[in-house]
Length: 83
Image (cartoon, rainbow, N blue to C red; front, top):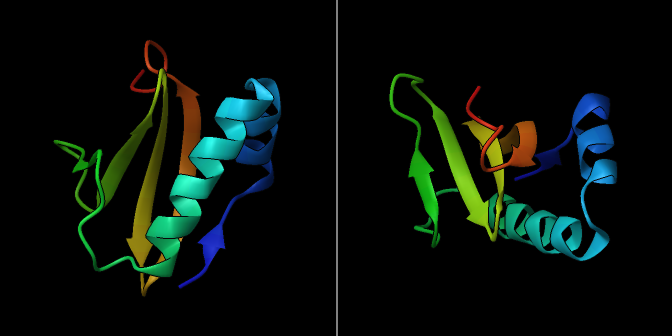
């Protein structure tokens, strides 16, 4: 039930517009508070077992849920995040 954001992902958040970064971080915190619930705009990634993506505007966050903890793998604009 913890949101884990590695330093590399924190740098990705720093490069985003502040309002978008705040909204995306709020969405990730809501997912971390209840990882077993259904959340809007959260879908599993095809081909990556255990990985999910959350959409907030033009920005995407790819994360995994391990033992109830949400671990953010990357955050990027929608045209770059899946590369």
